[in-house]
Image (cartoon, rainbow, N blue to C red):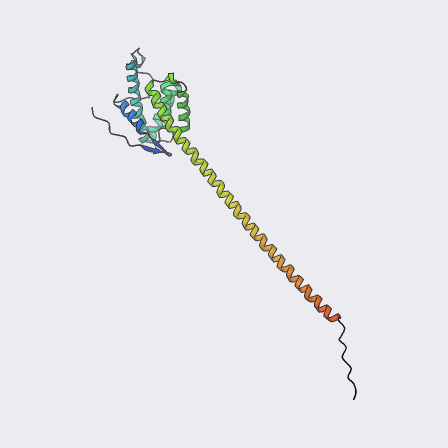
Length: 229
């Protein structure tokens, strides 16, 4: 059997998707089946039959392999194809909330590259499934936990980035306000300095006027008598 070509991780909003461990798990699933879709309205007969646990796990792996192929088409398809895939997954989840249908819809919402991506909603759906582990097969739980960890990391980084941007905006606003206050204080100091200079000039003029008045009021000095010879 030919080994599948290794996938290259892609970045989405600051998060690395998928992790090497996730790639290995997905590759193992892909080896179990060649095709499949998650848009069918009825489960395959083998899923409804009372099969041994190993066979049921194999059937789940087959369905998940088809899901992963659909997610790949979702990230690279045309807008019309993407809209159809999202609508199909949503309708399947609305018909049967919880379990595999909810996992598939959450994975669709978490997949980057399409306009309907909603990582926050996907995380909510996955957290609900994590609180109900009995609703999923072991391989589904593992995939759900892996995707939930990715979303927690991605949304955590987004939250940190938003907080940093808000802090930067606040600092810039504070600096702008400080600049305006400094300009206002400088203008006020200039005004007060001018008033002080004007007052000093007036005081000097008054002092000069008082000296002139004082000199005018002073009596003339008596001249010494000149003796006649």
